Amino acid sequence: MQTNNMEVQNNNSGLITLSIRLVIGWTYFSAFWRRLILENKLIPDEPGYIGEKFNHFLPNALGIKPIIEHLVTNPAELHTAMVLFTIIEGIVGLFIILGLFTRLMSIGIFSLAMGILLGSGWLGTTCLDEWQIGTLGIATGFTLFLSGSGCFSLDYYFIKKKYARFSG
Image (cartoon, rainbow, N blue to C red; front, side, top):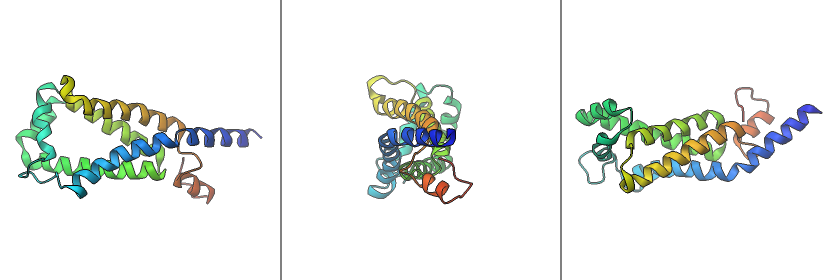
């Protein structure tokens, strides 16, 4: 009886956080979509190149200033980092939406958000988007880590099919 009670409680917490999962998943997946599909912002010599933000981040970065400085002074490495960051955002966002490896991906959300917060530092109102996305990512990543994905997820489907590698 105790197991059924815990299963119902776990499913309820996942159901309650379904909207959070969809919103934060879309937030990260859409960054990938906008940056790569709608308009390629990963081309260094084109206007709108995402790497240009690092020039603005550098003076105000918190704790990771040497990393940002290294990337800004090494454009090839900056480009590689931007491509990897964008791909990771896309994968993490899509997996969160689908509820696949939700707890693992929630750590990805938390980590991406922390990178955004530390990278952007505090630039006042010129940096409001980064702080909104970063704080949202920290809060929702932690919430999803605690709640799991519940019954509306691929995690749940695979658990019910007895695939032991998956956990909601």
